[in-house]
Image (cartoon, one colour):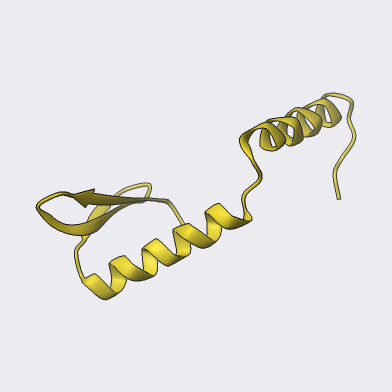
Length: 72
């Protein structure tokens, strides 16, 4: 995914997606596209580390960077 995307749901309206890039933003209400964005978001969430593991990985990378080590 390039830029940010926010899936928004409402109790009285169909869901929509708001995307934002460096110089523009767009609202997507086409049901097929909203469905694609939701699937992509679900796949990203499934592949993501838990918050604690993410923090540990970031801290490890920062420490290696401070020590002049590069990760492969």
